[in-house]
Structure formats: structure tokens, C-alpha cells
Image (cartoon, rainbow, N blue to C red):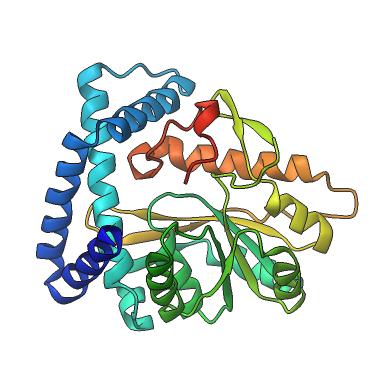
Length: 291
């Protein structure tokens, strides 16, 4: 119940207060979580250290603490945006979202096989999906269900208000195949594995379980994979960065397709690690399946 009430309060603050004030409150709450949620703080710090280590950078302890706090603060802003931009007009999205390489998405759609959008728990993936819908693309998002049914219904309500069709993990295979056959977008968060399979891949220099769904769908349907990420900019507007489409063929190895998705995630997270929102120790084996 307390979790549901917290979400309702966050929604009220985000939707009914002026934007700058809502962000200020989000930042202050994020600071409280940073200082009092020791387990999450240690996890974020460890994750940041690994990302930088893979890039041959050794930040000092002081720098890592500052980066971890910044990650919490960015997540606070993400939550404000999640609720604030539930019912958002195309005009408002065009005011706050710039697009890089839209022609890549148009090319992928032109193939007529549907499009698999892959992204990560990074930047603001929810607003990114809203922008795709505003551009006229039918968007189906795969989401892991929340532990509390009331929270799940609330989150689904906000996502549906953006124009998404929500498909839950575990019930998605046939539905997603049908969406692609109909020429629609299937959007997947590809940095977390919620399956029971032991699919591992090296990410930032260490092995971790990695979802294989996008590779399987692409190999099965021939649909192109388009990595896309919505980055928060310093002025709290956004950049929708669209990568080169990954075009499968009859001989495509799903594992190789997944490696190319991994490369795109490493590129974006490596440049802006404080916008990657993973609050458990990502490379710790016994916690890989946590939500």
C-alpha cells in the first residue's frame, strides 16, 4: 500500500506543480534515497566503477560518490517526467525532444517487416516511446510487471495514456510476432534479463546475463533492430539518438545480433553512465534477475 501511495503522490507532484519546482522536489527526494538507501548506493557506485574500469578510467572515491549521487538525481527527474508527460501533445514533445538520424528509422520501416526498437534503462525511455508514437508509429512496449498489482495498474495506465500497447514479460512471444507482422514497433529494454535462461554476454568487461529476445525476434521475422536512446541534455530537454539499423538475413546468428545491441548500449552508457538506472549490483550473479 505504501508503495502505491508513494507513486500517487509522485504523480500529483509531477503533474500539478510547475516543472522547475517539481524537479526541485524530485532532486531533494532523490538525495534522501541516496543518503539512506545504503545498499542501492553501494550498488550504483560499484556499477559506475565497472563502467569506468572498462574504459580504462579509475575515478577517485570522491568522484564516484558524486557520480552515484548524480545518478540518483537523474532518476528523480526521470520519475517526474514519467508522470508529467503521461498525456503529452505532439507539439510539446517536439518542443522538448530533438531527433538524431530519423532517416535511419524511416529506412527500417520502409523494409516492411516491422521494427524492433532496443534501448536500456537509460535516459528517459518512456518519453522516447511517447515521441515515436507522436511521430505516427504504432508502439508496443514489453514491460516487466510490478510486484504490487495496484502499482502495476497505475503504471500501465500512464503508459497507455502515451499511446503504448503494453505487453508483459512472459506473455509476449506470439503477440510480438503478430505486431511485427503487422508492421508495428516492438520496443524492448535490452539491458536486463528477466528470463530463467542462463544467457551470458560480456558487458563492460564482465560476463552478465543478457536478454536474447530481440535477436530471436529478428532472426525469426527478418525485422530490423534499431537501437535508440533518449538522452537527457543539460537544459532538461532530450535527444532521441537513433543508431544504424541492424538488418538480419536468413543466415543471421541471433547471438551476433545481440552482440551488436550490446555494443550500442556500451557506447551510450559509457558516455553518460549517470543516466543508467540500475540500482542493484549488476554483475553480482545472485542478483542478476532482480527487478
